[in-house]
Image (cartoon, rainbow over all chains, first blue to last red; front, top):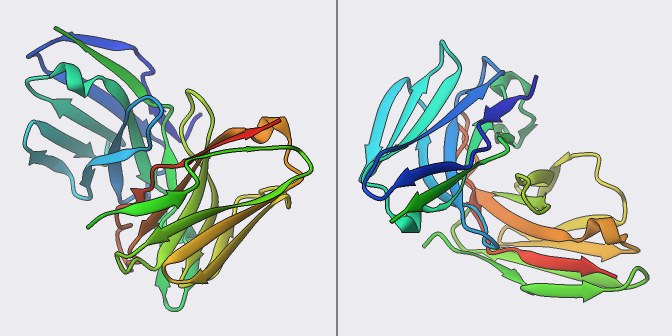
Length: 121
Length: 115
């Protein structure tokens, strides 16, 4: 079983519609979840992060997290052609396996394979 | 300012060359990362530095040698690479936090081609 799974798509939606992107993860101890957008030939760009169960909204974007179901999603409202890109779900590795340096710690991210979203006019 | 810069943008090298990739951030982040990304694949973690110390090496071949001269700079030294090492090399940085992982901010990447 892959650690982080996403539907590879492509997901095609009409302009103005809601695009729904889904991600499941296997590490029950994961605490931090990120959605990145990546245009072809460019580097990943942060869209949202979410740490707590429930919804988090930022403009047209809403991230939803359900730790019991090990599921995180991203909704894009009023989709625009400029939203066409690959969306990467990234999940932090279980904190119990974090290494420590100088009394603090960092997190190791595992990325899903990405979902290609196409918004057509 | 959430900018991470990387140089060069493009690099073509032969299998016997030695080259270096450079990454710089001025956000006060104390964790810096190197990722490798092949076409149509997600980024793969290579190295993590935390407080200028190497914290993670994801079993990367020794022909890749990271260096963190100070808290703002991260280098990746390349030697005797193979054509299959051709990829987009991404640098990222983040704060180091006790609880939740902070956001990693990515640089624009270096597109490496090994002939």
